[in-house]
Every structure is written in C-alpha cells, then in structure tokens.
Image (cartoon, rainbow, N blue to C red):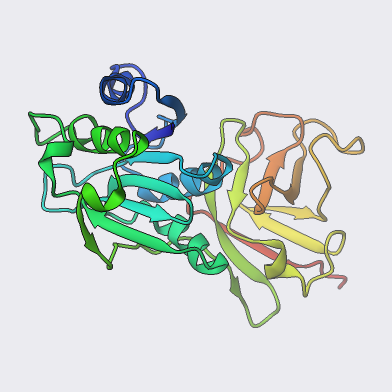
Length: 270
C-alpha cells in the first residue's frame, strides 16, 4: 500500500511527521512518500502543479493525501476521489483541478465522495488540523483496502479553479505565465510545445520574461556555448517551457515569480 503526502506545513514544527504517525497507527504496513511539505503557504495553484506533475508516476492504487487547506474548519467540503487508477484525499477547494484536467484529456474515469463518515476519522477533530484528524486517517483506511464508497457520500461537482494556460496573440506571439519557480531559480512557464508549433522553434524564437529577451532555445542545461548565468530557454521535464540561468542557481540575472508574464515570439529580422 502506497501513500504520498503533499502539504504546505513545512518541516520545522513536526506537523508533517504527525501525518506519518496517524497513518501508521491505522495502516502499519503503509509505504509513505513525502511528495512535498514545502508548497508555498495556502498556494492552491502551486499544489496543483506539484501534485499533477508527480502523483501519476506512482503505482496504480496509490493514495495521495493533499493538504493545502486555507479553508480548514469552515464549511468547505472534505473529499476523497478516484482519478484514473489513483486515489486522492484533499479539501474540495480546487487543489485537484490539474489532475482533473489530465483525466479529462486522456479519458480517465473519476469518482468523488464527501468525507462525511466520522468513523474513518480520528476521535477528536479540531478546527485547525484536518490533515491530522480527517485526511490522513481516511487516506490510511483507503490504503488498507476500505472502498472509496464507504468513506463518504458520492457527489459529482468538485470545485475547480482557474489555472495556467497560453494565449495566441494577433501578431503570432504566444503569452503565458510563470507557474512555478524551483529551488534552482528555474521558471517553469505555462507554454507547451504545441502552443508554439507555428513559430520557427528552436532558433527563430525569442522568449521574453521579466524584461529579458532570450533568442533561440537550447536542448539541455549546460550547453557548452553558453556561459554560466546566461539565460537560456528549453523544454522542462514537465513538458512546459523553462527559463534558466545556465549552470547557475537563479536570481542573478532575473528574479521571476509565479504569475509573471512570459511571451514567445518570432525573432524580428528588421
């Protein structure tokens, strides 16, 4: 039985480890992987990117517990879901939107239940730590073999939120935004190869971000003709456009942040 954990808890206070303890108390044989506990606080969009980019590499049947929950203790719905062959336990606040978009694109079946069966929670539930008292216990029960239908009441209207995308402009350029900035300072942007297939990629395009203009795209980090800290553009392993400081750690040339605009256009020869 496999369980992953994704939260915005950080690791200083020990809240992330408490989830492990709760799960082991219910499912002692569980294999637990921490996807990330470093989601930016309350950043549901960032959680969407990290979870969708990671969860489906795990074996079929894995249970993914996602706790980025600015509405904890309110009337927001707690949910469990089956998306394709994977299970998710999370607040119903849009944190699974990207996974649902993936399911729609590839034709996976989905199923959702409202977590309204307290027998699968801890005995005491506070208004501030449903990750401990609701989500991780339910995740453990699912991993231990309790059917999805048993842990809640079915519904079919999960909350979704606007995410990232790309737009084609009248001049042929394509605009998007920075989705995520990793620990190296690399900016992952919301433009896919299919979005710019009408442009002369790779050599004949210009990528514009934070006032900088990068002419052409490269195949990989560390291409020999580029010096350290030179801005480069390439395709990230996630499939999206990535802007990086070559062989650097980011922040020396530009300081991108999620939401910053990015444009790809044909190089002007005028």
